[in-house]
Structures are given as structure tokens and as C-alpha cells.
Amino acid sequence: MTKRNGIVAAIASIAIAVTGLSTSVHAASAQVGVILPDAASSARWETSDRTFLSAAFKAAGVTYDIQNANGDKTAFATIADQMLSNGAKVLLLVNLDSASAKAVQDKAAKQGVKTIDYDRLTLNGSESYYVSFDNVAVGKLQGTGIYNCLKAHKVAAPRIVYLNGSPTDNNATLFKQGYVSVLGKYVTAKKMTLVADQSVPNWDNVQGGTIFEQMLTKAGGKLDAVVSANEGLGLAAVAVLKKNGLNGKVCVSGQDASVDGLRAVLSGDLSNTVYKGIKQEANAAADLAVSIIKGTAAKTNGFLNKVTGSPATAAGATSVPSVLLVPVGITARNVKVVIADGFQKKADVCKGIEKLCTANGI
Image (cartoon, rainbow, N blue to C red; front, side, top):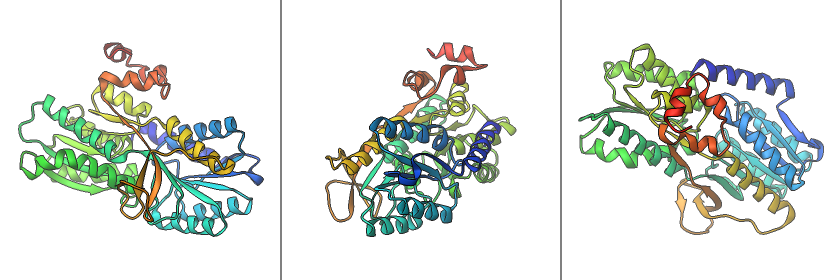
């Protein structure tokens, strides 16, 4: 994990502690309760999702209560109980794992309260809707970016590792399904060597760095690519590569289009990342919550199988109506897309690397 990411996570954690884990409007009688997962695995939950969800609910004239479980499953359940007791009509959840979230969903269902899975699907849950990006497509973009980087580096027989996300997060499973669909065939054909394949518990960036250091040692310091499931893990790998004078020489993927991630893409430390328009995701989730409260038709564009977490072709007992949004692959050449969309600010991304930004049309 980079020093800056560590500082961001620490600040977010302090802010959560000071505010009692909550940002709300009329929390005692909020119509929508939102539970975010933590502030450490990614800065997005506090810096982006909270902001965009708040704005969407305010615009719709709906009262809301947004709290953060801060990685604690017991706190997650307690917050949900409080929201249900306070009369929430809808719960919008980002789960810590499927089992603990399912318990919350089942309790809500008994009280006639509908739940929406936001960003992460609760397997075997009783959710009414799911909102996220096409996460297999995210993985395909990661794998394609790595493939193109290796091709550009003219590596004849690449040695690669998979640095996967949390084993308790179905999204991590889908990301891996995507990048393996792109790169796995080359491994099977022995045109690439998969040196290591390991998941990182709880998306913990510090653990991710340690796991990657072990991978690099196992590889004898000879690696050509790190297929990393998000930027937190990718930048943790970059920190290890820097210590060994290998950053910029090894292809490393990411996801989230954070300021640090985009700066690393421009500098060449990350070969590619994936941009997911979180404002678009937050607005879609808020629209579903508002439609439930107001009794209007909900707008979805697909289905996901609750048991397997894979895309489903039609409605059914095991499928959940979903809003699946389209991710965008990012390399140095199109970082400007993220800035033009207003997701990140040019001043933040380009500070100190203005020449790189100019060279890439920013």
C-alpha cells in the first residue's frame, strides 16, 4: 500500500470514528439506510460513494442514513438493526461477506423491508435488486490491458502472477473469471507461465504487499506481469517492485481510477486500470431505492444468479433483477476520460507530473 493510500485510509477511519460512522438526513426516521463496508480497502466508499449517494437522495427528496461498518460484521448487523428499528423502508448494503449480509437481508424481509445489494452481490441472499458494474467485463479489461502491455514489451514467454481480491467478495471471483478468460488460454498453451495465484483476505493492501513479495521471491525476481484485482493491491505490488528496481518494467493492472492509480498509470508503474463511474452506480442505486419507496416501476437491465453470482439470462427464483453498468479500460492514453467525466481533478492527478499529463493530452 502506498504511503498516501495509508494516510487516506487513516483519515477516513478517524472521520468515521468522530462522526459515529454516520452521515444522514433525519436519521431517526430515514426512509433509506445505507451501510458501507469500510474505509481501508478503498478510499472510494467515503470519498465517492457516500458523497454521490447523499446527493442523489437529497435531489429525490428522500431521507437517508449512511453509515460505515468499518470492516466489522458485528457493527454491520447492529447498524442494520438500528435502521430497521428507526423505520427504514429500504436497506442498501455493501456486504463484508455473504453470510453476514444474508442474515441482515432475511431479517429485513421478515419486516417487509426490501434490500438492494450495492456493488457486491450477497450470494444466496434475499435481496430485491443488485446494482454494480459488469464485473466479468472488469476482469476482461484488466486481462486485456496486461496482454497488450506484454505485447508492447515484446515478452516472448511471460511469467505472470494473479494477485486476486478477497475470497469472501463475489466481485473478486468475477474479476478473476474475466482476466482468466483472457490470459488463461495462454497459460494452458504454455505460452505464459503462471508463477503464483493467490487471493488477499479482506482486500488488505498491507497483506497484499507481503503476499506479492513472497510471489516475487518464489519467481526468483523474474516476473513480467502482476494481474492485480484493484489499485490498492496493484500499488502495493508496485511498492515491492520499486524496492527491487523493477517498477515500470513489469506490467501491473488495477481498478478504481483513484488519483494515485491514475498517476501510476501515467508514470508507467501501473500498465492499466479500470474506470467505473461511481456516480453513475450511486445514482442507479438511489433510483431503485426511490422507486421502492414511491411505488414506481424499477428500471433494470439484466439478471444475476444469486447462487453462483454469474450473469443470468432471465428472471427466476434464483436470479435477482440487476443494473449492470459498463466499465472502461484505462491506459495512459485515455486517463483524460476520467478527468473529463469529473471523477478526478486534473490538479490532483497532474501535480508534479505536468509534462506526463501534457504528453497524454490532459
